[in-house]
Length: 113
Length: 114
Image 1 (tube, rainbow over the protein chains, first blue to last red):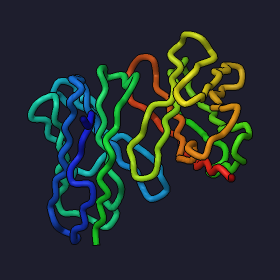
Image 2 (cartoon, rainbow over the protein chains, first blue to last red):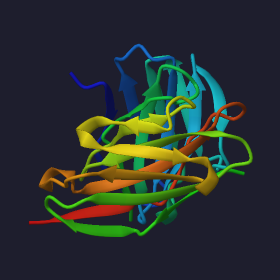
Image 3 (cartoon, rainbow over the protein chains, first blue to last red):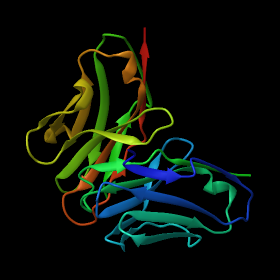
Image 4 (cartoon, chains in turn yellow, cyan):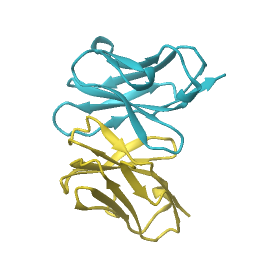
């Protein structure tokens, strides 16, 4: 029974397209996150939601828009994809906003061609 | 601003040997510290965390880390490496109060030689 699941696992798309990545957690956590891991494995937070409210919004282009329909879901929509958006995107959740223990999904490898 | 530096992007040890992965942090206030492991094609998994209690922290899979304030370090160790320990390891820091986001180091890839 997967705790944090993301779909799709792989996503290959052309520049300029719009795409979405979905994330769901069945842990009953209040807080969810999106992280980006670049080709050098560097991991950086993008967004954090607590009970459907945005609490962390790092310096991310406006083309990236998170949406939390309920506290078990946090989707990431990306408009006008660029080559530099190619990365692995991880969804995570934690019981508290402090990420004292964050549980990560398996990642979505996005390749923009 | 907080930051984490992991010394050595790649560490290679023999099976059965001591594993030592280094992490130094920079923080103006006492932080919380974490080690995460990432196996190939998987998400991150928490190994252990320091949250102001005991300075020597034991985690899963036989790993432990010691918080040394004087050295601003939180090195990860395991007495005897197993082949299954081969993975990417990330140290992370978080302020106890304020913006509660994890800031990760650049990662250390651990290779185990038979």
